[in-house]
Length: 441
Image (tube, rainbow, N blue to C red; front, side, top):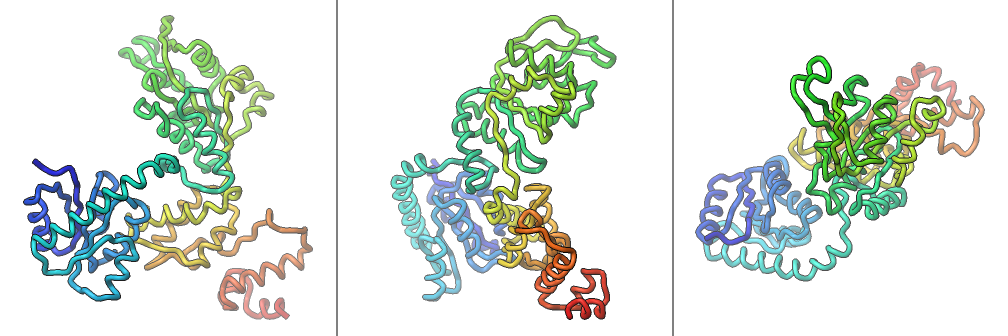
């Protein structure tokens, strides 16, 4: 019978990989193999691992980077290093990175067994010590990342909402992460095992939205060849997320009002009401009160939807979260495109922090994705789009400037950004070097 521990072995040497696996299987451990860090990360993402055994010398991403990443993102997993290049300095660096022990090649089955038992014993002790602390302090919010005061306000509301089915209205600019907030409300609470159904009301043609939301019966319209349930019935006992709710027609809004009031739906073409138990979360990036004044949105539905409101801050309002978001996207696309961990230079990060981000998080993700494609190693200022490198944030300007003052400040800004390369600065400014020299005088 296998032990309950799952052990992940990472080594690009297939002979060593097979040897360690055979030894561990003979000791009744359940094993997983990976010949690269990328494969290891996929296994870590989808599997509960109790011990990581890794080589140090590997192509692309080395074992030391894997140890550092695992220590940060999977701190409860002990790390055991297998190395063929032992040294005091190397051992110190390995232990500082988060490994609990290391063994050198070649090793015996008994040496491996002792190292594994020691590492798992460390995990057992840490689990007992940290279990209570983690339960008290760790508040996961899935893909929703941020520690800024603006985001703490959001997560505080999520904590209050996650275990009840109050109707929630989320508003904020496009690209701020409204659906992530909705998913966090659902998946962080006691109803997480129930369905979560996301519906983009702006992506479904108006003449189809009613039948998609509420279902229809056979013969209700041309093409309705059999009865079909709608999104509300699919979300029964769980959550339905209605994004871009302002795009719903007045007829659809009336049906939504009935669902909220009566907790029942009537399929298109039917007179029979069917009970549903669904938490409704709606979202929009437009002002519904303006639509109410224009008679394009029902006022009674608006008040039904806004039992609890959550404003998702723009990225500019939570600029202190930019480093965390950049790290997330660097990992995501670094592994996907380059098969390795990537970093960003302090100078590039500073440029990103000073940009005003009209497209919010979605724009930031696209910028990082592009920068990784354009870079050979780590992301630097040169890999960022021109409009970001040389932008001026008018919202941070203390006073209105004359055209002459503005031009002077901008020229100096471009020179700083190009390390005083006048040829490059002239290209960006769309003037010749002679004109630039005259302006500098």
